[in-house]
Length: 235
Image (cartoon, rainbow, N blue to C red; front, side):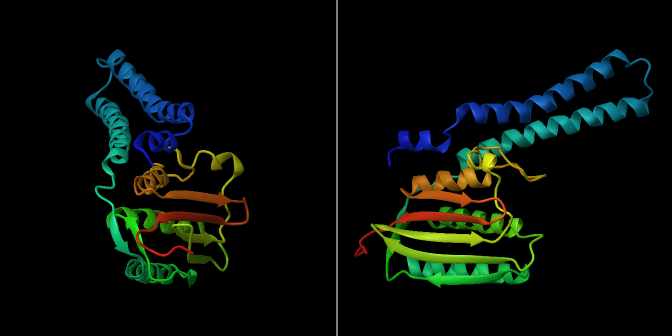
């Protein structure tokens, strides 16, 4: 996949992204302006304690803006430096071992189905780990208040790709939010910055793969990652 096509796929709805960015930056800027205006107009009337309150409030608002800018920088920072030919089975065994321990600690039942023969993929180890950990962590978060939480992981191979599936039995994603989940800064989770899935999708494209997410509200979420195989007999 050429870079130009990949860039188009990364942010399909530019207007939506700009709307989110304006909201995330605009609200703190407006609040900062009001805070400084009040402080300026009442500077001689406020005692030192009151002045300190307004200065600290302004500092907090500025810190919020700085955090957003740093988060946006991270989108460019995460890149696939040089995809290589990686043996898939050892990689998957290592990831599965980590996932088993993490899900055991969270009391989440895991079903792990491996349906892939000896194969190699075109990938970058750090980038691939970043993608899968993002998907896994999102699934774990979705199961926080679920009775009998379960995650299914499965691999299969077809048409020159290995497909990794991760499915949870969580509450799912609202239909109106599905078209926005890959847009930077979009999130429905308090305290989150909404960069995990956009970065994960970007990395998958840079490895000539693709990432898909399907979800029905009340019926869980299914994430699929397609990785290009190298030098393998396709099935």
